[in-house]
Image (cartoon, rainbow, N blue to C red; front, side, top):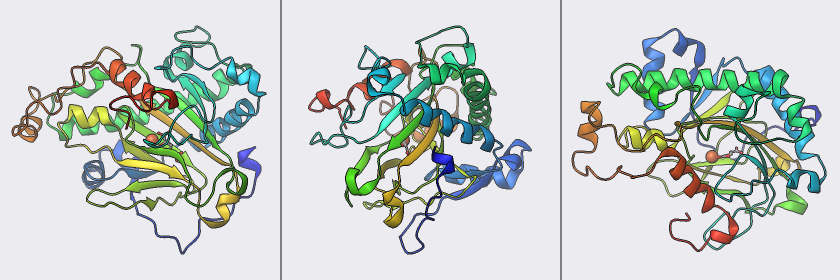
Length: 340
Ligand SMILES: O=C(O)CCC(=O)C(=O)O
Ligand SMILES: [Fe+2]
């Protein structure tokens, strides 16, 4: 179990990139200074979140992830989606490429749809392993519900800051319409036999969707800050989540909100000898929402795209956008245009 192993601390002498720490309770209370800091972070690099109130659910999600990813390989392979564009279910290591040369990834994913978790015991998209089903009510539903509430709170704050009419962003993320929103547990094997010093476990990417709420115990996550060409570790802080803006919010806001480039590599120093677990909740727009800059709804967005009005006209729905990005991560599609 990931929670029961004593992990070495993140080393002091490794260069890191600090993220602004945002207090969720202050954001909920509408504290103007905290909202200013949140805005600063969301238009630059992402942020860390404290006082989010999801610690118990996160611990239980890690247990559920370990129970499920610990199942026999043949059992897990029954839950690989038939359609390569879909991410719900199990992804074995080596199914995705981490770079344009097609180097195989070393991570296993378990992806659980928000729609399936909230509708349980009804099925919306797919069936899950027994270890998921037995935890759906007690662990997964509460984690998903709380994660959705947190991301929705931020989405409302960004909506108002961008000068959209009240609820414009919320309408892109309706609670009960099908979406690609999902919870993801990730296992990466330890270093010596799995990863060498420079190995990338999860290739450089921006997140596909609106907001990601990420929980890490070990280092390994790296960001490329704007204007830089180098990668820096992000130090995990106990009880703090890492929040990233995804590319859908970048598009809706005409580039004002920034989705940052990140990747996962071998954890630093002694941490490399341990299995790495992480957990993410991704909020994504409802499937049928068209991804484009909402310039008619906000003078600020109109001004941001004035010099290049077509830049964010993707011509794709959120589902088409997501399916394309999932497809081009797959190893066998790595030579197709637009892979990375
Ligand atoms: O494992 C991590 O720290 C990050 C995972 C991630 O970036 C992703 O799943 O999109
Ligand atoms: Fe990511």
